[in-house]
Length: 199
Image: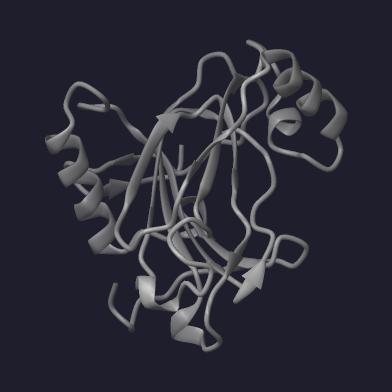
């Protein structure tokens, strides 16, 4: 994205990253163009589905990553933009862990998006499912696609020091989930027209 882009970034101190969100004005032309290209390339997965939210996270050099959670949408797409040479943990580390377990229909957004307050409830669902998370290793420009209501987390990572070497992930959420309750209103986007407006 252009170096001249301006947007609000939120510091998530405990999670070890800065986050910029569509609802806070993060809508660089490049990311909207990528969203449009994804729609055209995968019509059976997202087609004309509305872009519910998108964000960019820039992490500390070494950290445990974003904790277990699920997203309030239908499809999640996430990819990484930091060169592989910065990933000191090698190709098996620094990626994403994705469970098969899903949050129950009607579960409040604050439950499946907060591993701190509802850790026991989330863990009980994952344990009842009985399947381990699939670990998807970090690769530069790798796109990971999965149903938004499955629990997932960032794998532990160790990247080289220096601002340009920090782990960056870009995420798109497609379609607001109809089974979620209490999810925040995002700034939805018609990416075909590059028209973002608060709803």
